[in-house]
Amino acid sequence: MDVLEQAQKLREIPLFSALDKSQLKLLAFTSEVFSYNAGDYLFYQDEVADGIYVVLEGNVSVLDESTEEPVVLARKTSGALLGEMAVLRSVRRSAAVRVDSEALVLKISAERFIDLITSTPEIALYVLKDISTRLEDTSTELAELKLRQLHASN
Image 1: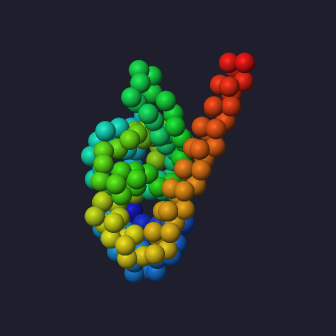
Image 2: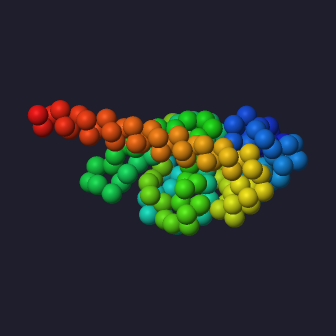
């Protein structure tokens, strides 16, 4: 995939919709696209966060592998942003990401991602909304789990 094709693919991702053509080309030029097969990992839990990933095509699972049997925390598809929280916080990855089906994934270096969110308010706002939505979803799931546990113990 050349830079122009990659820039066109990026335009289809909501995260990058606020970027103009030249910004998209620059992002395509400064990022890497990788193809993965089912079962491959984008990254592992506790790894140093050297960049973020955007699923261009395919499906992945976010896994907690701190237990004997991995736990699927979420399933993500095209347009999903992965690994940004570890980059933003400068910490190790809190989960692993495994490819469920063949996938095409864009990797943006940590430095480039920080530059994008500090120079493009629309991208920063998108990332904040995405993180807020996931936090709300997690809070709802936790409340439902507590309610089920309460009913089960009665």
